[in-house]
Image 1 (tube, rainbow, N blue to C red):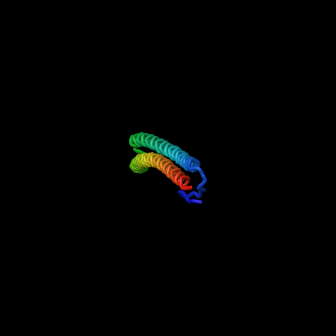
Image 2 (cartoon, one colour):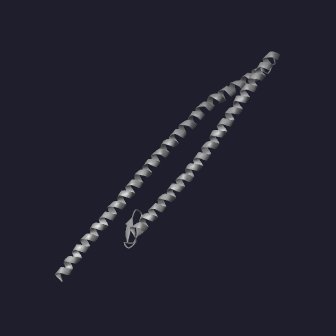
Image 3 (cartoon, rainbow, N blue to C red):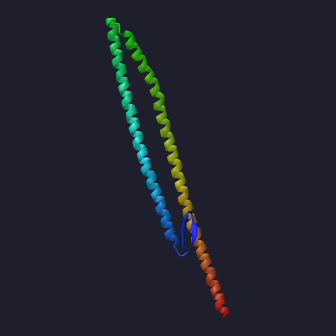
Length: 158
């Protein structure tokens, strides 16, 4: 028995079978990553839609309050102070929404960078696995050749 990359296997087990298992594990991990990626993308879109919907409602509310304020000023209504306070609160909320929108954009950029780094590492891994397969194959050929030579030498001696 030999421990190979966290998996115990037999010497008799085919390297191709081990490669298939590794390939299957890689595919499974990639499928899990893609599922998580889709989930993250879906949640990101939901948050973006909520933010945009909220921004739209806030803008509509701001317009309505501006109209109401104009009407109140025309009437010289005693509730003008309240309207002014509400308008100030809306302006404050608008100022708070701007950094949130920027934060969403920043997180999107970070996500894209992380995805790109992941894809590059995956490509590098695939190249390394390919190189490993080549080296193992060549090593097996050389050992078989040497064994054949040794076998011939033993036959000559007997």
